[in-house]
Length: 146
Length: 340
Image (cartoon, rainbow over all chains, first blue to last red; front, side, top):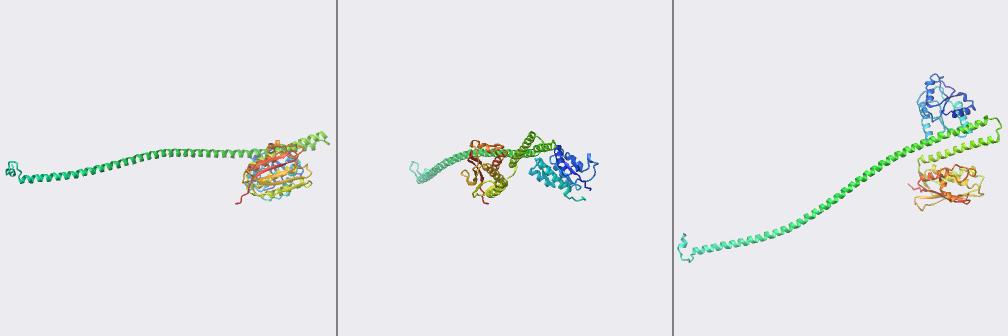
């Protein structure tokens, strides 16, 4: 499976999308982000279905996944990714407002590679997204042949 | 006519006649004897009958007694029956109560789940808009032509601080609800160790101040060490905060047996800080209740509410004594640790 340079951002809130892209711009990563706005769309993207049936083939280098999403929630998306042999090695970073212990635990149990709580203060938010982006999209290595 | 009478026709008894008379007499005597015997027999029989009658009377009495006993027993049986009915009713009642308890438990589980969802919702949905306000304020600042005038700068600060305060309130509420939802893991807890650790975490704030710590020897308690660390962190942090204006602060932590409950120990943390007016004692432990303005002392007013919540979940009590400008003492009770 070919590996894309793309980051897949699964985020329903457009304000959050905008703030996240602003933060990723600082690491020159914003242009590499594909955004989908709910869990169902994320699955369509990953499984080449619906609007994404004809997208350029390849897995994203990392999936940044919100938990509370319309239609299919983040944990269900995560579960389907980790159960699919063609997708299960893609690093999934949960990026959420929830710092509830149960969510963190469920996320890791389903195979999340990282869990980040969105900081409230903007400078901290920018810093977190920048570091997260450059670590998973640039520094981190994943197996080339899945 | 008989030959015997022919020999003596004028009435002189003949030998034969005499013999007959004798024989008659003998027979009469025999009859008398027999009668006597029969009489005796009758007398005997009478006595027997009397005896039997007496026996019958006794037997009758016995029967009467037995009847009474039976009646008594029957009455007892009726009572026992009633008792059984009562017991059955009680059993039914207990069954019904158990059923109600199960239902209540289910309801509680449901409301716990609801609370869980509620907390999740607060955590996720209320924080997001705040993050957006804070984010777009910063972006607005960078996109405005420079320099930003003083008034606008002030407005930016107000919006920023208000959003951050709201964030702190949400965090406070979340921490309070989390305490109610987290299961306690109870074991032996050494409060002295926790106190040392907590004091150490406040080093940065205290190193330029003069604080005399007086930590007495404290007995082990039974409780959840993570929760009790939250209690001590809040109480110690308050003591440090509210002695800030003192040249020389003294903070004492001690314990005493609880006169109201032998299984409990009273702990107290006493400071010589700004104290409080006893009139507002009740308010101290309420959620988001504050006795000071933000300008004087920071905080959202959730710390003591959390302390009360945790101590109550351990089956203990909290209270406070204070006097304005003289200091405050906070008391809490916890169960003694029992070996084995």
